[in-house]
Amino acid sequence: MVQLRSFLVPADNSGAKKLMIIGVPGRVGKIATLGDVVLCVVRGADPNGTVKDHEKVKVLIVRTKKEVRRFDGTYIRFDDNAGVVIDKQGMPLGTRILGPLAREVKEVGFNKIASLSREVV
Image 1 (tube, one colour):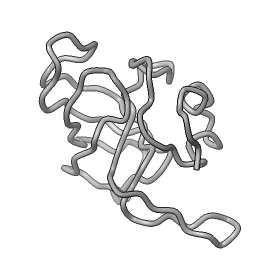
Image 2 (image 1 turned 135 degrees about the vertical axis):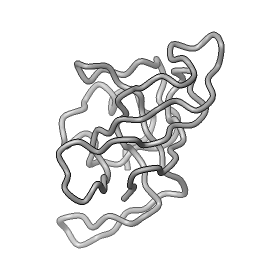
Image 3 (image 1 turned 120 degrees about the vertical axis):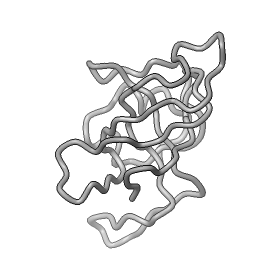
C-alpha cells in the first residue's frame, strides 16, 4: 500500500533511479496497492536510459512493504516498494524486470511483465 509522495524503486532497466508517486487515478483515498497503475515523476535518471529526469510516467506497482491479504488467507509482503515503468498500452519500457513480482500483477492482466520476471511469488 503506497500513497501520494511515496518513493518507489524501479524494478526494471528503463533508466530511472527513483520514482515519486504524484497521482493515483480512480481511487478516492489516494492509496494504491499491488497491480495498480499510478502516475509518477522520475527523480534521477541514467543519461542513456529510455526515461528522462523529471519526466511523468505511468508505473505498475509490483512490490509493497505493507502486507497484502490474498483470497486463500495468506499474506505477502516485500522488503521495498517497487514499480515497473509502462507505456499507454501497458507494455514495459525496459527490457528486463529485476527482483520478484507478486502474483497479483499477473492476475490483473499484465502477462508480458510477469513473463519477463524471473520469479513470480
